[in-house]
Image (tube, rainbow over all chains, first blue to last red; front, side):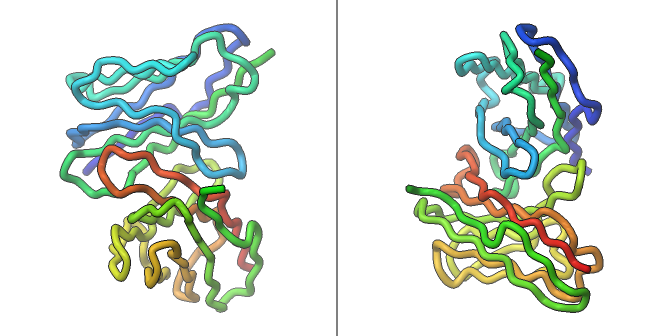
Length: 113
Length: 113
């Protein structure tokens, strides 16, 4: 069966460091992979989408990589700030699969001042 | 202001009662979705609709029903058949293609007592 794995343990880092979150998937052949941020008690907010033919995508302090051989996406936040503290969700999408997004369970990031 | 609105934010119901959660969008999106989120868990897909007057079951549709009579509205009814209805419910919409982002509402927290 299809599975999306994100580290369930919270990631604690110091302000100014780079945070790296992992999204692994099995039995998927995604053409796209999306990352979202969710704050407690709120709906997720879209951050980035990366395509299968893109190795890397950047947006301000965010960087996403997509390795279809390893079946993995990495999400990096450089120069992290306490305001980056949130849960980050990944959602791989197959080109011909179900249109609705299926999400990983998310990784909670805590940036200490 | 374009967006997706869920109401109410908090909802309390007695066990055995049906309850309907509202979701409205003015983004002119074709597709709409309902997810359920339990504490510390990821989002699980309940139902989705790609077009007016059509909808499909997601991964946990049992005990829920939906309708899509208008493009901008996708109400979710939690029926008495749902064994464990207390949860955080999120509605989302998108343009419907595979590589487009989803926009989420602020969620409805349903508590059944």
